[in-house]
Image (spheres, rainbow, N blue to C red):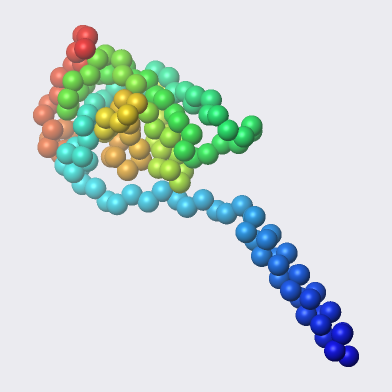
Length: 156
């Protein structure tokens, strides 16, 4: 009788251990990107560079890692034909880096569309994300506390 009770307890312990391992190894839902509300003037103030332009290409450089996997932190490089510069100085062609998106707050640039980009200067050049205040299309600069804007520099 004591032995039957011990065997039943061991089975429950193993079942609990297996269930715990399965739950720990199961894929988890990614946490969504969460941006605090930023006013238009704050978005402009927080950016090192603000410009409007057309995306000429979007590339996702090959990430080193396990084959056939991807991450929301994989890099994305968007090349812009700069039309108007509101803050800082930029050449006519500018590259902006972000990440794929989702949980990492990457911005989803689409080739041939126009955007106004709010970027910071990072280790690899201009960087932006979903929380920076990027806008598809043009902006009214005065709403952001920005000057009217000027054409890009011929060379930098």
